[in-house]
Amino acid sequence: MEYLRYGQLYAWVIFPAAVFLPLFGFRMIAIYLIFAIPLAIIGQFWIAKSGKLSGGLFHPSANGVKDDKAIIAGMYNLARGHLQTSEHLKAEKEYLEILKEYPDEMDAHYYLGTLYGEKFNKPEKALMHFKRLNRKIIDGGVDYQYHDSVREKIKDLGHGMGKS
Image (cartoon, rainbow, N blue to C red; front, side):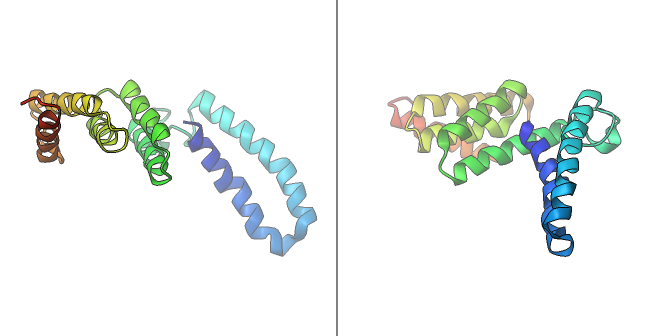
């Protein structure tokens, strides 16, 4: 979750300093950064502790209510970033963290199953995640976007492992 706070620190402190550098020169920017960075860090701790202002993990209109959709989206984005840089173990860790905190997240099962099947060559683990996902879809009566793909992957993995 820390990546959300550091993104805000960059957006509100470092980026403006870089933009105004040509206008005000190094001396004024140095003075600005000496005061702005500690204030931004203190502000982030206060926001995280009180949850009364928008920022970090809280939605501005929710008056201190944790915004799970934003957190989940951030975790998926982090996992996708790891996949794009071929850091598959880090992506796996992020997907497992999503399932730990949000066990009903179907996409995490789908992406973990795909990761285990295609990158880690662990068909047993891939099949386990696809079967769990399929069970959630069937039991919950959910119209899941990848349901046909899940059934196909279960069938392919089952045949590949000698199961029917």
